[in-house]
View 1 (spheres, rainbow, N blue to C red):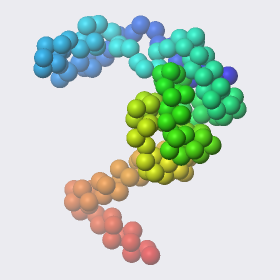
View 2 (cartoon, helix red, strand yellow; view 1 turned 135 degrees about the horizontal axis):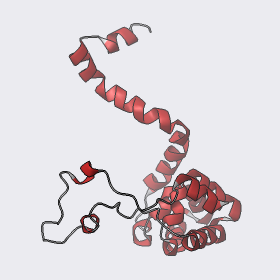
View 3 (cartoon, rainbow, N blue to C red; view 1 turned 45 degrees about the vertical axis):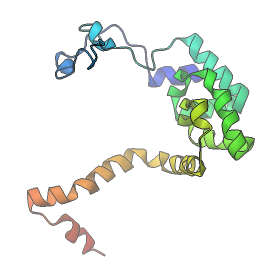
View 4 (tube, helix red, strand yellow; view 1 turned 30 degrees about the vertical axis):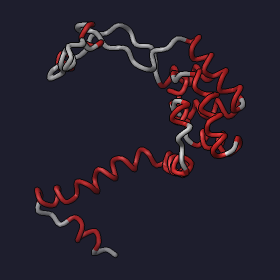
Length: 178
């Protein structure tokens, strides 16, 4: 089921050509002359992080189920299917580092709230602070509002510009209702 969820979100893509404008303004080499991987494949799409085979996805899920339980692993894949593409070798080591800081159960709950933490390397997990735990609650609380929060934030940030360009007093009109 986890692999099905993953493939619904990140389907295989056939070898397709990039749009002609995709490389405009993109350099072919770094400052030191190292060629970029994408530039080597002229006219084709580059490899995505989600381009993994079923064997790797199953191995990642097996590791997640071993550490967190099968039901919890499925729930994390539902929340963030891309976790199956993360380095499974870091899952246990990172959890161990967080467990030293927060305790085993609290660490598992933190990762369940924010599965994106599974991408964290163990050396970085060892440097976790209370903010890591706090933000796991924030991520979990705001996840359902994601489709509204980003456009809403962008609108609020662009409101002064919109008022200046259009001459319509959006803020004073809206605040006058209250």
